[in-house]
Length: 368
Image 1 (cartoon, rainbow, N blue to C red):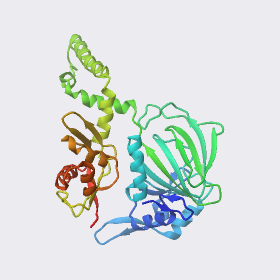
Image 2: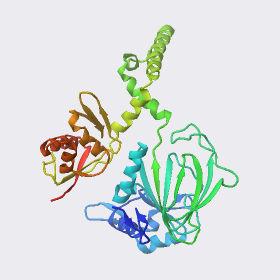
Image 3: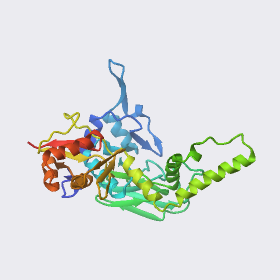
Image 4: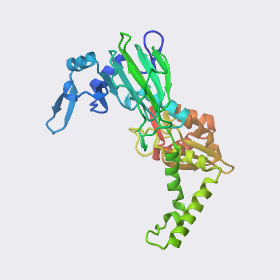
């Protein structure tokens, strides 16, 4: 559910939400942190180390000190807020389904003109959504083509003036490609809150990593490297491996196979289904939802395959409408799935229970 911010605009995250999240969760550094001038503020500067009688320790934020550090110029960061705040999780899931790549959302709050992180770049694409107040973005562009998190060379720091200097206000969206240097500050005199949706990039390095695993089907790739062989043996070995690699790359469907593997093997967003433990009962009001936003459906003449959360199932063709409704991401009751597919309630429950056992579907409600 997405609430209104009081001015008719939808709000994924409001100040009250942020206050509740900090109070209700033990978010330890670096999951939650304060940053100033590109450096993490020591947790002891705004928290007290608590230890219970079982010996468990955690940093408990102290409001007065927490507020003071923010007023001095620090910025508040909560990583992966999509994992703990349902409205943000819904937005992240939608983007993941659209872009077909993992998405992580971080929350940032700032109060001063000080740049909490300095001028920096990210190793993934970023979609910024301004929620509250204003934020100035100075954008410098890239200094290295396609920089990566594991790279042979670090990008050089930018020089000169930014290529763009923009102020985001509530509802504004900004896209930053990976590698683009930027500096951010709340210099408009208002408290600022924004979300960054980090889109994992899929580079040639990731593709080649998958290709290495895929080539394990070849005995030449699985065989020992002739490290102590004769020059002729080493030459023959390289020729055999080269032949296998080139044959795979010559397959016009190889990128399709890789992309399908990315979607089908990703764990998605697992969710418990309590009180249901082993199966989904055949009750019309049971509401279920797919937990794998990038699940793949392949339909042939003899059946339909659903692949997601690291598993794959093949069903009879009449099950296809059920699978397509689930893959769309909208919660659905068993009664609705039965009505849309023409299957009986018991048949739908059997299909859903199979996906439930493979963590690709979760029970999210039970309308009486």
